[in-house]
Amino acid sequence: MSGAPTTAFRLFPWLRYGVSVSVLGWVAWQIDWRELGGLAAIDWPLAFPAVLLAGIAYPLQAWRWQGMLAAQGLVLRPARVHVLFWIGNFYNCFLPGGIAGDGFRLLATWRTHPGQKAAAGVSIVADRAIGLCTLFGLAVLALGGHLAIYGGNRQLETVLFASAGALIFLSGGTILVMHSTIWEGMTRRILGDKRTLAIRVVVDALARNPGALGAATALSLMVWLIDFAALWLIAQAVGLDAGPLALAVAAAAAYVAAALPISVGGHGVREGTLVLVLGWIGIGMEAGQADQVRLLAISFWAVSTGWSLAGALTLWLEPRLPP
Image (cartoon, rainbow, N blue to C red; front, side, top):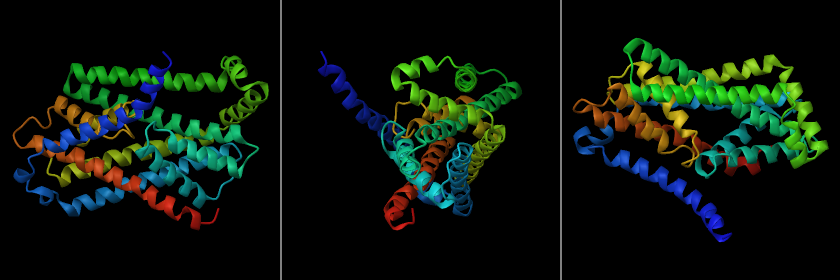
């Protein structure tokens, strides 16, 4: 009996790779490349600024994490924070689980601050929670605004309710952890009194630092809005006539779906959801537009994956960089 769960556990990462490759392959296969004219269909003077704009979001995320570290009294050189972030982003993007990069950042921070393990862990959890809460909040705003302007759509309403539910659950859980002792009983049984007290101390320190939390939230807003703007530029580059609000709705829904633990790094799920939601909005239904929507999805995947691969270069250079 014990072998079945173990086998399923071992197979699950490969299933996630299968989901990512299958969905991406399906989207690319549906494109009539000869009709589009191949890569010549892309307006490269618009595509290059989109690539550069998308890249700006990554240093902002590193600065957000640096703010969470500083709020815990953990001092790392800014250059070191960016190195660890880029490598962690590479691991998160290409390894199953979606948290391998977070584990790498955690271990690297422990090596620098071995006596502040709880603070290092809380900095990464807080960084993740703020990023997700901001995403869900923007998804609710974009979907709600679109439905208010253009009328009801059952599929979009479902995504709206799911995003709102996730926002309430995650933000409510975060507030509960920061301002309540309910969770301490469970952590005492798992981690013991000493570790639980250490976590309580650093959580309280973060809760008493609204400036750091506000700055991290502002950086998160900038990250997602830059991503949405980059997507709009890519849409222009592939000749797709789609407004910023429609693309923001589709992008927000796509990133929400990518957070589900069913693929590797959100690959495939993000792009498939982007195509699906744009179809619900009515973009891609006309002759010729369907290929442009799919090309948009593949191009957006290529941009985000390309920037994630920069983490591989950072990983190669890391032994040669100062600690």
